[in-house]
Image (cartoon, rainbow, N blue to C red):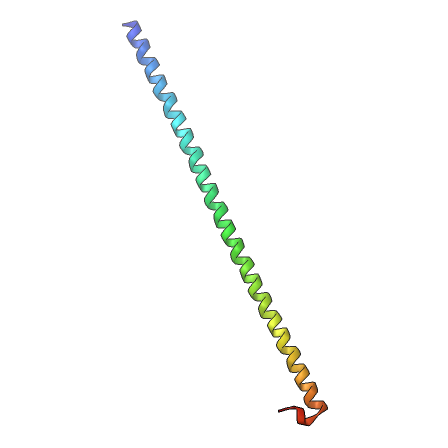
Length: 85
């Protein structure tokens, strides 16, 4: 009877240990998954912000060029009335 009780305690301890190991492995895997998701979301947000920055830069350059052309056109028109179409 004593051996049987000891064997049962050993069996329960082994089950408890394996449950703990399984839970720990699940927690680690879940943490890795969440980490990868957050990293991917951060990469996505960075790419979007870089694209928006390039877009705004191109708009500003185009506006600057348009202002320069307008200024040249106005100067040319003031210098020679025949040059303004």
